Image (cartoon, rainbow, N blue to C red; front, side, top):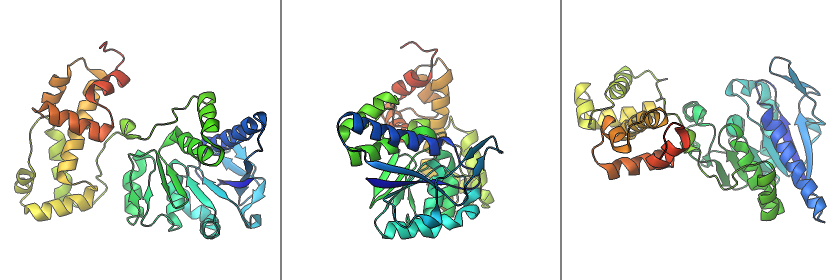
Length: 323
């Protein structure tokens, strides 16, 4: 059996990301037993104290093992932990690193990626997390290759998952890896989870990174957002703010984690998404309203950013439209 350590961190932690893995892995053991096979997972909640209070004391979790007593484990699951709680959980950092060096796999769920990244194990590797936390994550961990459009990353025994309840997709992925496809498919049906979902892009809301001190770039961002219906070139933007194109592109990328062209596209597609969610305009009308006149370019860019075609996006999110 694989010894599984589900961390119970201190501070602002999402309770469902502790309970969820416990329930799914327990269900995997039950299904294996019912089909004449040995259970795979020896599941433990691992903490630094014998009681952790969450949500202002409304809930409490009682780990069955203390981290100092776990000398070897096979799989560590890090639940969703808010970045501000990292200082409270330094005791886990060295332990996770040592366990990984001795062969343990490590999986972070949602913003649990912040605790995983604080170990240094993600440096030079791909990682995903909740799209809402992407800008903060990039600022804190610039040596990590953040891919927030992905639901799951898997690299050298280190796994990360996208935001919120998409962590279940990663847990099912681990079940499939260690127990087999049939077990993962069965559990996907029991928990009603789309097992093959690979992208969280359809859920992403682009809000632009403005937590920087480059005022001309911030004004350029505001100009783009206020003129979403116009065709704007990078040369035009650089000229408006009296910055050479090369310097403008460099500063823009540094400040926003997007090139100017990427930012223009994301702002326009975000406006298009809102129209498709709530309006009754046809696709071409939405396209023209956000400054595109080439339908192929619009559809290609829309799908690249959201993972869906404009028509599929409207079908998914606009209940008023009958196509």
